Length: 229
Image (cartoon, rainbow, N blue to C red; front, side, top):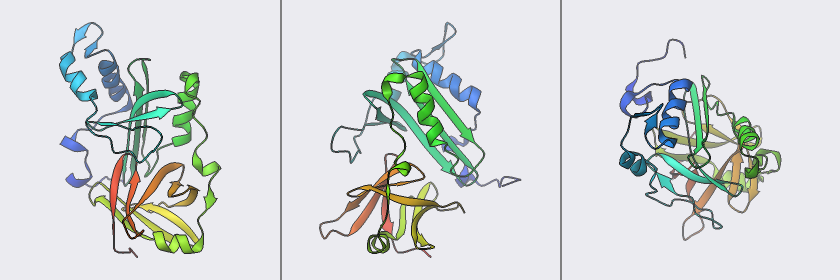
């Protein structure tokens, strides 16, 4: 990945680049209703619009997960927070914050799928003990059976330039690979149509004939395409 190719398809929305310090400062401004060190940066109405839920894409039957302008409202134990994760070949990023608690985490990594999910949850637990975030599913999941693994194999696409995932069988195990990355993670079954890959939970959605149609991960729906090689 050095030098990084100048490919607009690999750039974030608007072509904006940042670093950990500046991204944390942005979250600080948002959590302070648009102000920073006494100066008004954004109108409070803009902050309210930014944080306002606009959709409810969750497959979680127990409680609602909302989506607001690139942010997922998620429950960490009893606490509801906002977060977003993303990765492209060579990079991974995570943010999580709670304006009410004045709490924010930013993780940026120069590594494909470098999301450091366990670190993400451990820091949340240290700073907001009431969250009691349980260990990631990868520590408690079960291997996916051979018949089920073959039934799930395929390419799942939200946008081929943004988020696409292959489920493959490698060395007898079902693995997950983000398109454009050489890294793979073993998929574990956590219950029903729920799974995890490298600790990141995802679900399978079936059609009326019980065939796999979508993969839902980090608030995104990925439609199944023909099997990838």
